[in-house]
Length: 289
Figure (cartoon, rainbow, N blue to C red):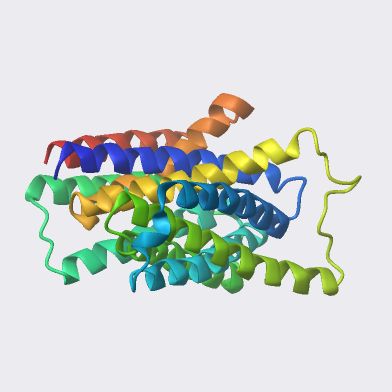
């Protein structure tokens, strides 16, 4: 594994973690579908400008079908995850969602990747750390079957996006174009779902109207951080084993938990702190393996 793989994969976890944190804050006061559609629309506009400026259309090819598929799967996974969190308990849903990493690992092994012994140990330690960082509840409120099913659907979807986005391009300009196509598909899929939701009587805007002074900037941050994370993950997967890149990128729940601790003064439970520590140990093993 190259140092470049580790660097870009860790950047992915940082960006995704901050995007999830920002998205989580926004959905406390704004409908989740609106957050998805508006943030992805802003990202699509920025990416469209980049594609035009770099001549990215010249990189169009069959690989864009992977980007289109990622754009279809992503919103379904995200909305399933939000719904599962609403059903709760969050202490069960969050660790189950981290199982997304199993998809790219399985694909990588199927394609012939064989991590070394140190890397295998790092994968195991990091995955256990991510699950524990979610603060799993071993006892307490019963879990609805629907919540478990939705979480597993979300995990499968997130893991599938990992695989698809890594295959969507082979050059920098091609990556911009692939991300643009993915975002357009995200907006179309999410927009259709939002329209159906509104027709069924759900609200599309926060109570009291749309706060133009503060909300657009926050939505832009979430959308652009998500785009950047997809880009850095694609680079990481192209320069090293997908099995390793996926595990390092999947550390984003740790970033989200630490952001909540730093900005919202949320106290980490002992099991979460232990999980974050194990995730960092696993990262070191992967980076040095």
